[in-house]
Length: 345
View 1 (cartoon, rainbow, N blue to C red):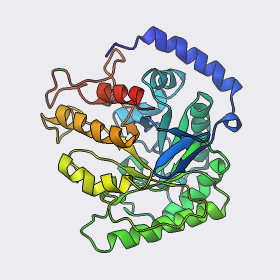
View 2 (view 1 turned 180 degrees about the vertical axis):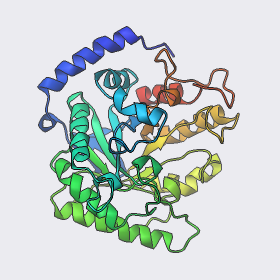
View 3 (view 1 turned 60 degrees about the horizontal axis):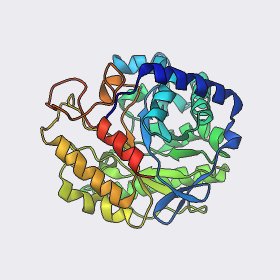
């Protein structure tokens, strides 16, 4: 993989800034679904890109380390870098407690910041995914792991800002925590997701709505039907190898056959040498994953472009599996993912 020159990124960043001044969300094409595929402006389309954590928590409530630095990295150069690596979509994780008026970390200013940063990405030519995060990075521990009243209040705060924007998809609840072996998992998931869909549609939202599977978005098989009067539902998986989908032989049953009849997107995934559960065979397993995704034209959001050691090295080049060994820094699936993004259209 050729290295992406930082000077070229700076030039592209400048052009993106000019574009941001001239393009508005109203000019964007409309994203939708048809059968088991995504469409854009009525044509078959595959969302490909990166997850971001720049606005995953209100200011002052970020996790330490690279999470604390992520907000400072967001801007024209990061957007240029995403373009250069083949991205057409950016996924923004946002804080459920930060958007819930009954939460101690609720912030109206934070809601405005979310809108501003999403608009900046749209103006630079990206489709955006707004993903509701409840886990520790959202800034408040011990939140319920399934969609509920706090989820509804959070979407009431932010959903209306994007309701008429066909260039934004709404991911209703990141990584529902209950496992498939719990007989109540799917009924609770169904009740929570249906309530959010109903609320957003009643408020006028016409966006594609993305529903994550249970077991941390590893499982879609067995998902009960959700009623959407607009028939614009899609589904998310996070097939991390250290989770329920670790073995390639399980992918077909966990989400593959489901994807034959529903639009499915990997809204978060990576495989890096720094992962505590790293395995030496991850290069081979990643190649198998991309082969499966490619056959079904399933797009991928790589985690996370604004956490540099997980995607790019110090020169700005995507991390690769060359000389891969667990425990190292800056080795992983990003280079393979970039090749995939540029090949699947």
